[in-house]
Length: 553
Image (cartoon, rainbow, N blue to C red; front, side, top):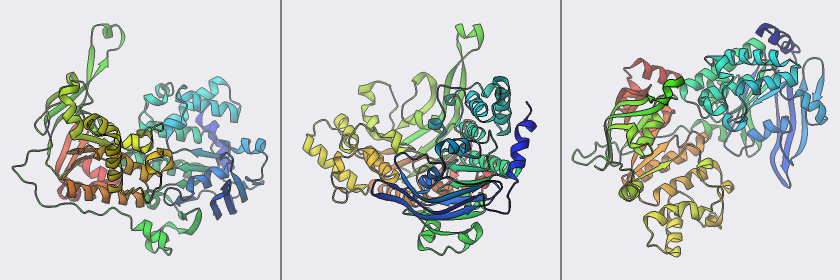
């Protein structure tokens, strides 16, 4: 079966009814028990239109999208959501489940935020796409397998036939997201619901995904409802914007109009949420010993040789080569680069998480090196702490906040009793903006009882309670909306000034680098292609790769 045959009928189908709204939502309300989380939401999307739904975490964006397909468990829905394909008008909220099941994935598809959890880890991605085609298009096994490869190729994944046999964990983040897009577009839907489709991607992959969605949207004429907190993405992609706050739509209009002259105070607040720079600009003391220093750092991963040669040894993949840098106390080194550039490997080496045999060159923390011996490395484990990208997955769901934040004290301050440890935990939580007076029963709560921004503050308190000298910040704000991101960055800046902390900041967000970093390291394929003071690198980049990264941002 050819790609033309697969897409011809749906493409014609999408062109129907262009004069009428494809989806008209009127007075939508969503309640869980007695709590109403979405109230009186009304909007419409025309065929071929791109509408962005924006707002802070908890504003009701994702709930609104899931309500349209009735994917919310134990939710009470009110209002109407009329889907009009030019031939039949159907209220999605009143449609019998059997008929709605026929629309899901066929006429209305959805891309979820995190492909690693949305994709089945036990099935190759090609088979997952082929399964949709067999169920929705009644294709044979061979036809669906070939059509899946063609869809994977269409999303720009290299070696589509080979990648179709790969499992989700064998693909990069960008490739997994493309596989999700291929699955969503398998039946050429009229309406695509895209829930934060680029949140975890670097700037170049983010641009590629946007371009891909734009090309496919123009080719098939489908409408797109995009849910996102990335205002740069909205400005680049959307035709219209709808702004949600506390479950209500407070403003909607053309993208250019909303960005140029937002009317509602909440929209103005969102537009003004670009992170500000508030760091110590004075040059560091030249006599001060660097907290973290590397000279010609090289990291080589062992790779199995193919065939019988694998019995006699392994090859090596160089993930980082020739990296040299130093971070004085109270300073931030920002590291930027695409996925696969070596950023995470650099962080792992700094944290002493890689075997000594894989690491060569010099890497020192206050003049000491990792020995990979528990007793010898214990002081370094206290001196270097890490804050991860996703606070929900990095905090144990089975531990209370007191246990999570106080865990480091059990190792590094075993002399403290339970009461003293609890007092230290309370003080550190208050320091990061979570006072117990404002959150009754704080220490006995669990991570799921807090918002994303609050969870990131808990992760920060866990790292700070052992009084480290260096924090490795691995995409610390990429999963947060713009207003919470601004708050967390302001907190990090304050703590750095007050405690003299050094930061190794890994991020794909140029605005975060501009706000936080003193020096910048640009990585490409494991090599440092450009480095220097933040203003020199960002305002006058010399290397073409840096220039491209900044242009795509």
